Amino acid sequence: MDKNLDLKAVIEQVGKEKNIEKEVIVGALESAMLSAARKNLGPSADLEARYNEDLSEVEVYEFKKIVKEVTNPSVEIAFEAAMKLDPELTEDALGEDLGIKLDANEFGRIAAQNAKQIIVQKVREAERSLVYDEYKDRKDELVTGIVRRFEKGSVVVDLGRAEAIIPTREQISKENIRVGDRIVAYVLDVLEESRGSQIILSRTHPNLVVKLFEQEVPEISEGTVTIEAAAREAGFRTKIAVRSKDSDVDPVGACVGMRGARVQAVIQELKGEKIDIVPFEQDEARFVCNALAPAEISRVLVNETEHAMQIVVPDDQLSLAIGRRGQNVRLAAEISGWKIDIDSESKAAKEREEAEYSLSQVEGLSDIQIQTLYNHGFRKAEDVATAEVELLKSLPGIQEEEIEALQESAKTVMAQEKVPLSRQKARYLFELASLNLDLSGLELPEEELKILDEAYYSELMDLVLDTPEHLAQITGFSRERAQSIHEKALSLTV
Image (cartoon, rainbow, N blue to C red; front, side, top):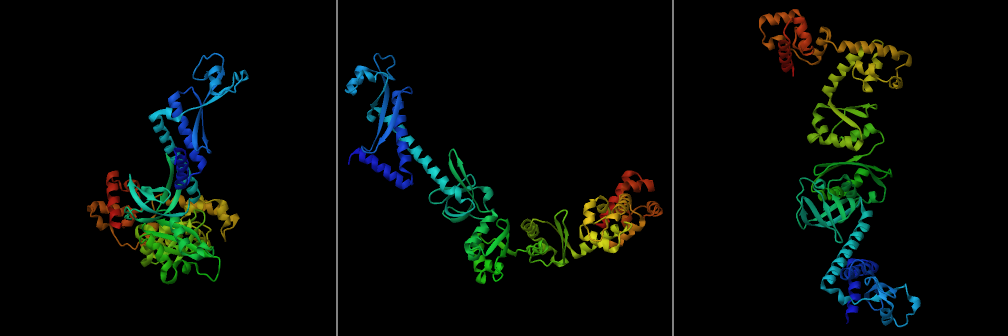
């Protein structure tokens, strides 16, 4: 077998092994031979390389203009010399270019080495282009690979035809990955860079869980069950919201599977991460309650203006609703898109009493109107005073003609609430707090206790609800002394 057949065999072999089009390899060879010839003949030479498929070789031609008298040998050739190369030339050929086939052996060892480097480079570029073309349409999919090595914190994964990386930020913090492990990951992005295509994988993205369920649950892949939303704290807990287009198919049951087989397969792939499967509801309050499961919900107060919900739970359910490190309520808020505040029944009852007291000071508000305002997120007279007229008009039971008077009254109440509290109101809040603390706990000199009593301070709550500035003003104490007494009273009531 001669060298030409060897070259043809190389082209076919490289194309087959690297899955590269023949034209790409031929282009690389032509470019390499052209570069090698130019290195030998200089930058001014007019050169051209062509792959001759019949001869199975890359032919390199140097073009020179046919002239009578040569002034620049690198680009010109005398007519007599041209006649020796092509005896059929006539004088009509003067001024035309003559292609002179070069002997590739004349390029030398260094030029040949350069040709090899260019061929390797071209092949690599073609491989990178193929990798990008193959994976650019696989974003948002799952891939499976083998962990090969670690580079600067990133995990390098062999996908078979390409390598991908899982950056540190996309790794689960408590997951122990070792070289040789089989790993499933979500294709986050495919970048085409000068140094080559880069496939970015993720083990933390919520869609990793979504795609795993799509693989495990036929009803999802068929479209009968859909995953409406997903929220995740990778390595700890994920919530997915599911709904069914078929009333005969239970979406939660489909995802759980017989004896939990389907959900357990996903949990196993995620190395034990907890998964909550939440039934999706069009009623957003009901959906939020579902998302907070397994906590029991007593009632929900919706604030459309701030797109927030106040969730009230029994006192013994508070920690369950909030979850470890606030995880349950955070994921519920993320999956629902609502801001969620969770209160225990006892705290909510106290806040409700305080709110109703403040709103009741607004002249003209009936008990029913107070209840309506409270249910729509109004917690004090100031909320009424500063509310948009259009919002108040939209509330049931609030008449447009009474809004101006209500807001004027609310402004008066608001101004009063910003000054030191009256003894009557202080006592009211004192009773709400269920405190029974007198001034003896302050352990003050007898004369100071007498001054405080004469200034109408008979209970610790009176001091707490006042300001140090006002306390100093009506008792004659120094600003520093009044501040000290106020802080001491506060510490005794916390």
